[in-house]
Each structure stands twice: as C-alpha cells, then as structure tokens.
Image 1 (cartoon, rainbow, N blue to C red):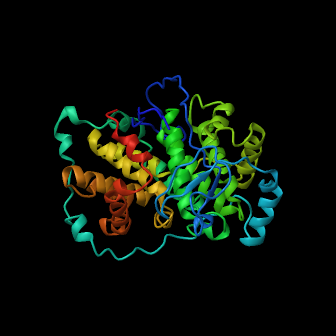
Image 2: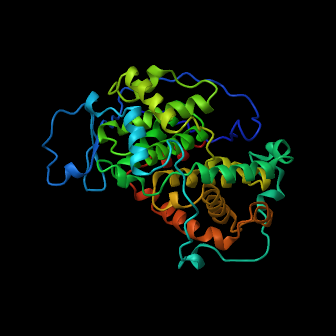
Image 3: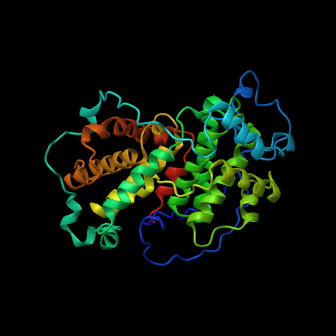
Length: 390
C-alpha cells in the first residue's frame, strides 16, 4: 500500500462552532498502485482454518496470530444490503427508541486508578506550560483565541449538551454477531489511511468514526461484508459536512478497489442519513481539544501529541465510549502537557470545564496504556501519520 506520507496535522476548527481561519489549498491526489481492500472482515472463520484455505483473494494482508485479521476482497451481494425499512424496524424492535435518538443515559462511573501515581504527580497548584515563556513556542491555536473568547463558554456548554445526546452506545457490538471489535479497529485504521491519502482534516476522521459508531448503535445484524461499505459511507458524509472540496463519489468507490458500486454507496448514504435523522453536527474529541487549546495555548509539540493520542482513542470502543468526548479530550490534553512539560491540568481549564484532575484520571490512565503500547499494535496508520515532520 503506497499512501502519501504528508500528514495533515495542522490546526482546524469546526465550522459550526468556531470561526475558521486561514485558507485551505486543494491538492491533487495521486492514486497508489495498490489498495487494501477490507471486503469481508472475518475473525471467527479464521479459527480452525489455515491460511491456505479460502476462496480467491483480490488483496489481503497476512496474519501471524489471532490478533490480526485477514481481509477477504469479495464482491458485495445484494442479499446483504441494509435497507432503510429493515434498519428502522430493527431499531424500534430492539431498543424501543426512534431512529436517530440513540444516546447514552449518563456517564459511566469512574474506574479506580491504581497507577495514578505513575502517571501524574498530583498538585493543587495551577501549572502553566513553559512554552508560554517564549514567543517562538506559541501554540498553533493562539491566533484563534480572539475569535472564540467572547463565545467560548457558550460554545463549550452547547457541545457538552450535544455530546450526551449524540453519544454512541458502548455495547453496540452485541447487536452485530458478525462484527467484532478487531474488525472495527481495522476499519478505523483503514479510514485513517484514506483520510491521510486525500489530505482530509482531522475533524473529518473524528466525525466519520462518530457516525460509524452511532449508526451501528442504532441498527442490528449488519453483515461483515457490508462493514467497509458502512465505514466508507460514514467518511463520505463526514467529508461532505466538513471539507471545502470533498473527494468525488468515484474516489470513495476507488478506495474500496471497486468492491462496492456507486449505487450501493449512494444507497448506504441515504440509509445513514435516515438512521441518524440528519443529526450530523456531533461534538468530537477534536472539537473539545481545540477549544481547550484556544483557552490555554500550548506549544506545537504538545498540540500534535495531544492530537495523536486523541486519534489513538478512536481505535478502541472499550473503554473510551464510556467516557464523554470532553473527558477524553481533557485526558489527551493532560497526557500531552505532562509528557512534554511535566505540567498538570491547568487551573484555567479546570475552572472553564469544571473537570478536576480526579475526574479525568480514569480516562487518562486508559489513554496512557493505549499510548505506551501503540508501537506494538498491528495497526500503525495513526503512528505513521504523526511520524511526519509536517
């Protein structure tokens, strides 16, 4: 797979909540020679079968253990299509809720953090980023402070309200017997590669994963052969919502190596919008993180590290879907600022968000574990993206 190595790690602000700044340049994309095809994502079928078995593959990635899955590039079948009527009936039958109204009731209780002492040296004093002492180390977000300062609190509380209403259900995979957590991890990793190749914005990726999780939360019995189609539709909708010049429909079909047709992708888009009730303005970790960095600027290294660990959190349902997006963003901010400068949750953000260090600690501990083991994971798209000097 020959993806572009130029990572788009610059600053960007959601056009709905924070006024945009700067101009965006549309870059011409060169198609790679090879393309990874998810096709049928199967974990259960691998057990008890050798790698020599199976039918014809168009492209696949070899596995050495059960943690890595084989991609079967097969043509989709109309018998596996997810129709609007079926999706609506499933939602009403299973959850008793209207389509598009899936949300979590409340935050999960915080987990005991036995390793808090290893992560942070807790302090009650307000610590400032040492980069604030130098003009050369000003945050990439510092220019946006004046844009949002007048409305920052209103924006924050609006996002906090919406994040509860538009939160996916942590246990939604129980309603999809053919889809496993490992399949979702591989799909999200593939979405990161597509976003990187077409130089899309980080917010587009975060929105796509949010749409994916909410769609699977509100439906049931999605076939594994349609999982990549669902993910591609989620990314296409997110690109239309967020990007100035989103890729064409044919480009999204091309990313799947024409495993699905344009007609199937358009049909899945309609299903998506019906199931999500056209509620596309979902708060994401990226939005909260950028708002926090506008209130309390940090150096570019800290900013990109925070964005990196925030994108790592997209790979895992457990435990990160049990936390609010604002809490995950706060944990990413804390982990980045502590790693670079050994500082803690700033007093300005403590008063702005109402979150104390103790409330952030459980999510911070989980994010730290994901951060330290990222190098050993089979999915490396996020790490490769942030390896770029850009």
